[in-house]
Length: 325
Ligand code: COA
Image 1: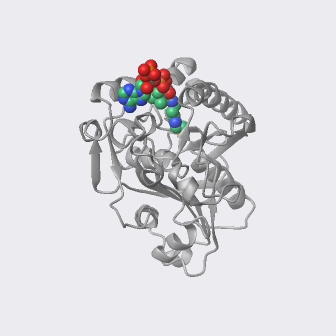
Image 2 (image 1 turned 90 degrees about the vertical axis):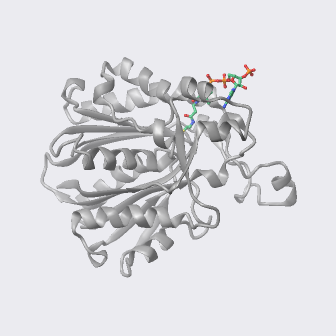
């Protein structure tokens, strides 16, 4: 027994910020952003709106599509790096909004690979027989931790959420294999220095802008392609599959140049790759489930297609999952 996806959902907040909007905020240009990243717009939560709302909407869509009621869900996992509150996270607020009155819930923090990690963990928990209907949400309000005066990071990120509902599946259906990795030597390539227990919030940390994401862009860039390539090759090998068997690749949506380089290494064509970063930018843990939901709902990915999901992110974490849609 493994796990298969029986419902997907996603949510993007209504406020759209284009590259032209960013040109008015920092010293940048639409041309620079498109050429270096492929991003043209991103969505942001309105001021004062709770981040949990995004996970709730994505989760509702997944439950509705699967025709599963909140009472039938017996575990909620929320992959998020910047939860509503450091304690107790985002999961309890999303559980409340979905009316999951009897299900346990927890937050999972694994960088932008959080959804891929969550799917591998969900597959293991369902395979073990511990849970039947498991809701996995990837949600991120990156606009809340972005330094809007730093052109090196503020052009890259967006807000959003995606969700999948999983249930047990016979062998050969749903998740076929997972491969997860970590490289702790790269822990600080992407990090938020203050507000945790190592460096609690103080006037000094706020003045030094240490509550915003700091990124070593070139270091992340150099690591991303080999990480996702290794994970993709190894997850396929562990399922006795070949690169030519793959119908669709859904990579973490960070930068079109990273994606193009990855598919060149794997000998895939752009037509086999789901890309929405031009519209939604990098939404961290939400990026793969949003892309998956959009591709399934539009009919681009058909039920039964072989799909590889692969991600890298803060930590540094990376990994891949291969599944039959
Ligand atoms: N607009 C205009 N110029 C910008 C800019 C912006 N938004 N951001 C940076 N620049 C400038 C830099 O200041 C630098 O100028 P300088 O040469 O005068 O110092 C120049 O552009 C080149 O900067 P560099 O950082 O070398 O660009 P790059 O080609 O490496 O692209 C990233 C930068 C961030 C797009 C790229 O490194 C990247 O995508 N990294 C991975 C990021 C990522 O995926 N993060 C999420 C991980 S989950």
